[in-house]
Amino acid sequence: MGGPFLFSHSPGGNCRFRRAKCYNPPMSPRPTTEQTIRRLRAVPLFQTLDDATMARLAAETQWYEYRTGEVIVPEGEAQPGLYFLAYGYVKAVKYSAAGREQTLRVLEAGDTFNELSVFTRRPNPATAIALEASGIWLIPRATLTRLMREQPDFAQSVIEQIAERMLFLVSLVTDLSLRPVTGRLARLLLESASEDVVLRPRWFTQAELAARLGTVPDVIQRSLRGMEGDGLIAVDRQQIRILDRFALEALAV
Image (tube, rainbow, N blue to C red; front, top):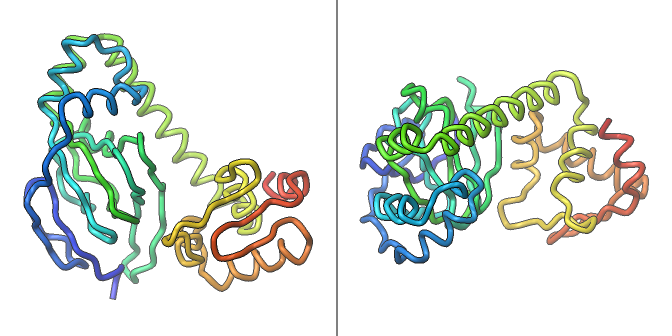
């Protein structure tokens, strides 16, 4: 079998993801216009828009909520717009023919996704799955293209964001092809830490770490044990504490 057994629904109501059960709940009650504007204002992509344009943008967005494990965007399907994550966590993944999962990116509140598909008008190159209950705004393609014509600063922001996505993917390919698993893990822990603590939500399992780092859970387990045995980190169910940042940084090079 390929990939996990998941629930799936898409904003267009199209349920064709081969590896998923399909579930089509009604659209959730949308936040108020004021709440939508406040959230969108926090996104760098929209910070150059004036009040009137922002109000129009908020009126044209669509609101969806997803349960843990639901497929938001299936790979290979055309999508109607740009997604903005209001709350929760979402992962973008690819599956091999044998079912092996490679996580490309984990998104958190404030992130946008599906830029490449919406602007190239090509099928989505990856599957987006809710790691926990998540609320998402869909901004229609027509709205985005109109904004790019009318707002040059916004168009520039879109170009810069897509360029950043490409740089991220180049960095990911470099990591997966040239850096050993221990180095990848060290780098991920350093990037995920706040005040030398990496919180472990329920979905932050060794299997998820393995999918992000292009390996298998047994290798992740051995790497964590090795780092802990060397005094670099301390691991428990709810968090990973960095004890020796200097040594961890040396591994991540």
